[in-house]
Image (cartoon, rainbow, N blue to C red; front, side):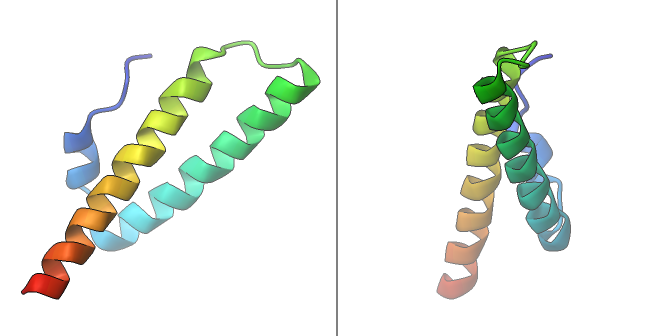
Length: 70
């Protein structure tokens, strides 16, 4: 699995972006549980999910800043 691209996050509308953030945070939580219990089979997914959450939050922040400036 390749790292997700920020262009994919920018294609989402505001509602989809918020839903994707919630979904990715839930996945991150599940991965943390798996890591703690020793059931995590693909440790790279943890890094990729954290990266995806950061990209989504960055896009959300950019949109919020542009909305306040306009």
